[in-house]
Length: 165
Image (cartoon, rainbow, N blue to C red; front, side, top):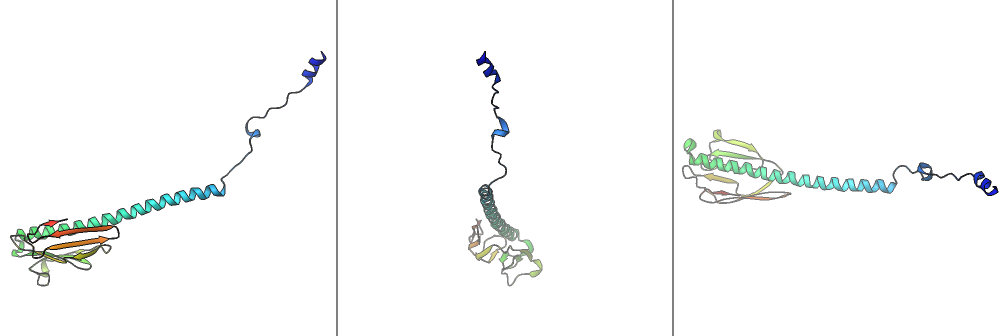
């Protein structure tokens, strides 16, 4: 019995499970915060860069489409013999002018249509394109080159009045 009394007398050792046995830690370390901030900044930089490039590309295409529309309209008006005169487009430093007449300098200013030009796009090449009445042929052949920080777009015009881009 003595052995049995000793066994029963001995108290079991408490077993610790759960929160008491784990060292409590809370919050983030400084390194973890810096790493997360760096990842967020990199993602933001890529998104901003892609967005800016997309806006520049769309601006260039939009400006090209405006010039194409003006050229097509001038050619169509010339072939339709509107006002019994030639029709043309002049690309100025701050605007486009659709005009009636053989040249921009000798045009009938009462029939001018002026459209604003976007400052972020630079132009080179042809600046005055005139289409002959009834035939639609062009008095000038060459290219109009538009460019900005994201790219370049070219419009070609031949003597027959064909407009290609």
